[in-house]
Image (cartoon, rainbow, N blue to C red; front, top):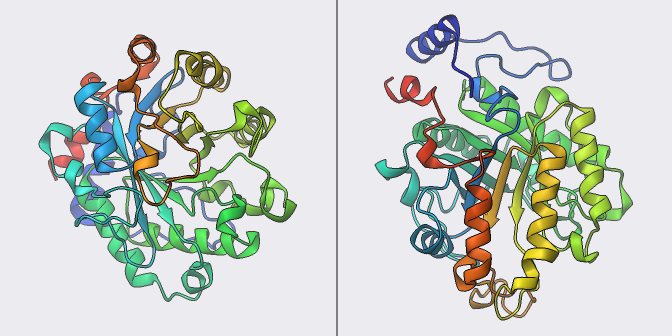
Length: 347
């Protein structure tokens, strides 16, 4: 992020000290919160890409130990109904989820959080206000971690497996954003995250779009598209073009070379990693979140063909990965890029 101007810093500090209220605009005209410095599309800056790892404790810790101890941040998941996996551990078959394992570790004070908020079968309760207490708790938690939190509301909204009806999804997404804005949660970035696959019931992509005033970033998932199964490269380009049209930064919010049964091979680098890094360059993608997991050992995913995508199991691939993310484009924790964080942490 470019250095904050004096008056921008002063405004942020005054807001944190006073908790000053902001005049609310009607939902259809409400603009992005100008006090939210993390919503600045310059962050992390043109030509820069934050490197994050996920998506469960075992997979992340394996990456930290065997690949790179200094990613720019971590992928975490929770759900709108119970907010599981934040302060206390939770495991629903997809590996242990425990955000506090990283957010409460001083070693990672300068990292960001990318949070997937699961809302399957909960859109109507959210719209009706039945989840407002949970939204309030979520807002308080985001404030408490004192770092940028990239919130993927109802992630992979267009994935048929989530069966989100577009009209309800838009209303639920807006409701959550409105609630968090009313709480003056300033360290949240609102991410509209697509599966980049053939959409649910053939709806057009923009059917799910909550509007520019409610979206800070646009996310994509990169799994099978390069192989032409459950999506194609054209699906990736379609969402990236949509983001460019709406002048929104793009993030790869979930990625893994699906189908690497038995472990990543040298061929995987040419067939999956290289096209992904090319996509990052082509669209100036600002975030790369890699899932470094042995999927077949997790009950939720076993037998589905996800395989073992741990980088540390292939010497050739891990060498090329480290060479790539060492380039000037890629931002890691050791770069201490979050020049605004000391002002937030001191309050």
